[in-house]
Image (cartoon, rainbow, N blue to C red; front, side):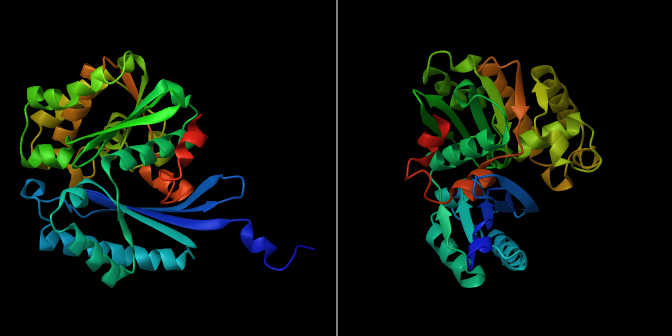
Length: 314
């Protein structure tokens, strides 16, 4: 007969929220003692917190949209009996002059303590999520997380994660149009970080990459299980980008696999992916549904400081 309370310790229900530049996402999962993470609920809301990202200030209407979403996520988390919640914000909040006001408003409205991640922390958590969800040798991959305001790159160097965050994102490049030459100039310094970086297997995460995979699969209804592990070659990315750039906004909203809310920023996102693949001479990329949310949910908000990722990835 188990000791009193013993059964309650077998499984922990955790939640993670990623407050991104374009969308706010929720993941609720159960974690068994051996560390297995079983996802029980996910949600995504296009809140576009990074609207007018170049202005350097979070707009009131964007903050209101995001807080409304977070209040709903708080209610959902309570319904699932979440034991531990991790709430993280990335590029839009990181760069905002009024970030402290935003963090306070979230606490007052939803009761969430928001942790604003540095670019390096964002990259590290994303890498932890990827290696927990894909059966790949961590030492042989380069993860690119193409977000709304920034793109994070992470790889292993002598057993420890090397992370770089660059100001290249789908929302940023839509609001202030950049040419391929300008995008390439922002990304190219990455190739000097480590000899042979370009020959690693490229793994892509984030809404741009998963949307391209869903489009390549012509999914009428998004299916994360089919998207996860999809291999996109460069020719497919080029073909999808051509379709996106020749179509008008209304036509893009009708394309299978493309969420209508993402129709305005997906061309810029696809161009970023194409530039990354060209610069790194990557013939293809593997798409991962497991990302920063999975890293936060599984390893907790202090993993980077505890150097947990080094122990996991060795």
